[in-house]
Length: 102
Image 1 (cartoon, helix red, strand yellow):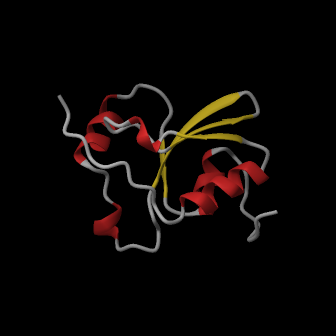
Image 2 (cartoon, rainbow, N blue to C red):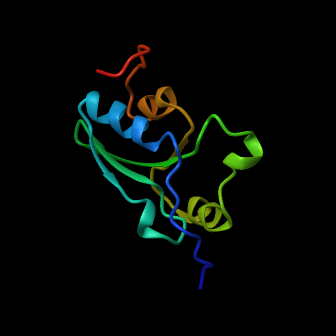
């Protein structure tokens, strides 16, 4: 069984969620699901996206995937993404970031 890490929310997750919702997406936070499952399930224009949020203000060493996340990402056969900024999260769903969140 995979080792369980505490379900932590990255400091920028709220901002990422707000930006995705402002773009018209539905967002369900899933960070507490465990076993390496991504932080957000996002629906946009009839498609589903799984996004792991990392805090872009932290150094790269602090943004690495945990061992559980690495395993999950390596074995998942569908769409998945890692986003460290609002712009990266919006790009996952095909929306250009214009510098502000409505």
